[in-house]
Amino acid sequence: MEQLKQQLQAAGILYKENEPLSAHCTFRIGGPADLFVMPRDEDQLCQTVQFCKQAEIRYYLLGNGSNILFADEGFRGAVIDVSAEAAGMGLSIYQNADGDYISAPAGLKLSELCKFALQHGYTGLEFAYGIPGTVGGAVYMNAGAYGGEMKDVLEAVSYLTADGRWVDSEASELDFSYRHSAFEENDACILGAVFHLEKGDPDAIKARMNELMQKRIDKQPLDKPSAGSTFKRPAGAFAAALIDQCGLRGYRHGRRKRQALRFCGEPGRCHLCRCAGFVRRSARHCKGKNRLRSGKRDPGREIR
Ligand SMILES: Cc1cc2nc3c(=O)[nH]c(=O)nc-3n(C[C@H](O)[C@H](O)[C@H](O)COP(=O)(O)OP(=O)(O)OC[C@H]3O[C@@H](n4cnc5c(N)ncnc54)[C@H](O)[C@@H]3O)c2cc1C
Image (cartoon, rainbow, N blue to C red; front, side, top):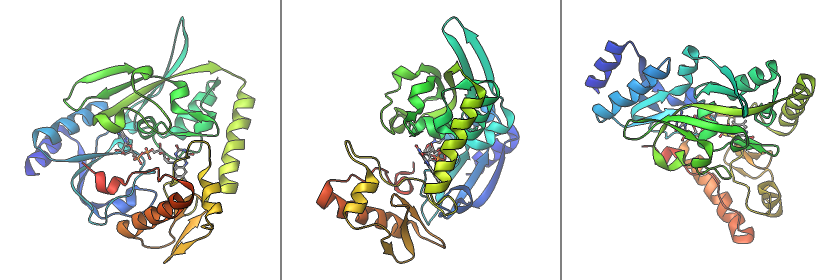
């Protein structure tokens, strides 16, 4: 760890020690990370990953922390805050014979990308406005909502492979499917993404973005700690309907309550094992009757 800290200092990369992870995820759960590193641009991000590998320190890539459940014990190693990177990186637009493209850094908030597309009159990303993640986090799990998903508009992704190579891949090579991409298996660090968008009517784009945001405000407990939907949508069914059929609407375990059917929110302090256990029990209960699959893995347990 000392070697890593020295390398970070020498490279001018900011970090904090013993940083509580509860402050960096929407569940607001999680103990301290030994090191919380904040690379401010792509070069620093690549350097940080390399330094961790050289020093044989385990690391975890964090976007906006909106799809993560950290362990109560925290993280022994370095959590790399990719969202800090967006501060030093810009968005750009380019055109070629095939159409128009927006290139975005991995650490940028999706909402900023959507607003940028609107500003420049591009349609295609309206569905993503309101998903509280970064570009990298959204690519990682092929985030989607209201009939759209990242893969629909994604042209290419640049990333650092597990063995430190910089690669640019077309989206078609990255095994995208419902809430899945190759990044869930390949240990790569997503650096940026290119989106292929069409020109549209800015008033219509804005109206659609506002309409979808309003739907979220009306239906989701956005003020409560959560990671959004807890269950994947099973083929041919809806998680909310299955939960309802099982009589689990509003079910409470301790102080946790299934908010808005699919969300698990907690108004106060909560522990990983209780929260994860609650989700698993609910999924098992439904599975017995309706074969509901628990969609999200438990990142607190799979941390590298
Ligand atoms: C209120 C609420 C509503 C939500 N609504 C939706 C919705 O409608 N649709 C939807 O799909 N999701 C939704 N989510 C879940 C979440 O916003 C998405 O999954 C989002 O894409 C996660 O992005 P993030 O930047 O927060 O990723 P994080 O939670 O920080 O990380 C998620 C995973 O991505 C990995 N990762 C992050 N950045 C990188 C990178 N640069 N390179 C490699 N790996 C990386 C992390 O290691 C981790 O495994 C919602 C969440 C909340 C709290």
